[in-house]
Amino acid sequence: MCGNGGSAATASHFVTDLVKGASYNRPLRFRIMALTDSMSTLSAYANDVSFECVFVEQLKNFARPGDLVMGISGSGNSPNVLRALEYANSLGCRTLALTGRDGGQLAPLAQLSIRVAEPHMGRIEDAHMIVCHMIGYHFMDAGS
Image 1 (cartoon, rainbow, N blue to C red):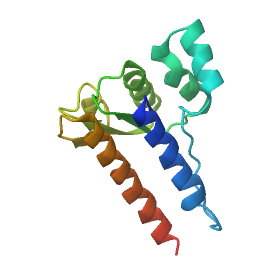
Image 2 (cartoon, rainbow, N blue to C red):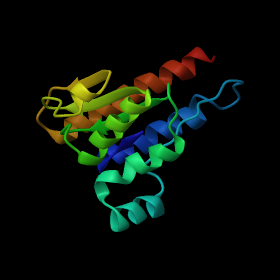
Image 3 (cartoon, helix red, strand yellow):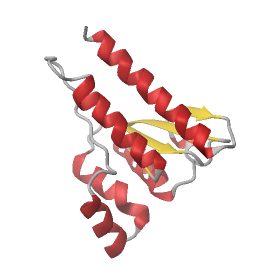
Image 4 (tube, rainbow, N blue to C red):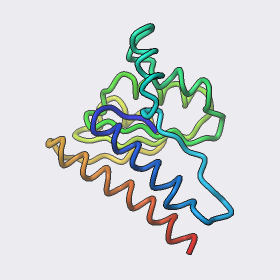
């Protein structure tokens, strides 16, 4: 999972919902991480290389072909999220994007794109959180 600003918080929140909420006391558990959560890693790459590579460089450590890489960008134009999905596609990962407005450059990069066709960033971010909760609750209910 990756995103910037409010989308970074959504990524982190969604990961928590799956790691704890949809995995606790279950034999099958989610292997998921928010690439937004290691401030020291993010700042090291941003300072020493570029902010554009902060997610790609982490994916080079952790992503495997067949994994799902999910990028969140309200504008659909966050360069670091774009680079992450480009890399994920080149590796043979499955890709999903949550975008807003017209989908930006991110929507066509993803194999599945969920676009909130709304100009207001706050509403876009709210809708993204709703989508993440719907996915999380689906898995929580499936395990009951």
